Image (cartoon, rainbow, N blue to C red; front, top):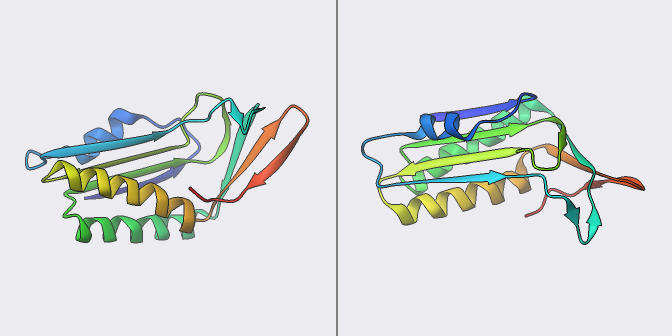
Length: 138
């Protein structure tokens, strides 16, 4: 099962874990990205995420399908927020269940790294003295 969501509402880790639960899973990994309070020592006030959602969902599905094939993933859940997020909030959650733990770790890492490279979701960092659009690289 592939679960892809892009939304403005807060993300929930339990929802993603529930989506990938499977009695055949020997390993389930979850990555939770959070808005940190600084970038290169400069205090961050908030982040803003924008996306071309139809294309982003399509790219996320391609990643999920690849992960399902390469690592025998039983289920994968990829949720991303758009809009304004404060420090401590969650912009992205990825959960993957596989028959074996090593595959779950590798699949989850591949997913976040590829998402940041290929999915049209753009991040703006807001500081007290300005703002900057950030290239989507891991």
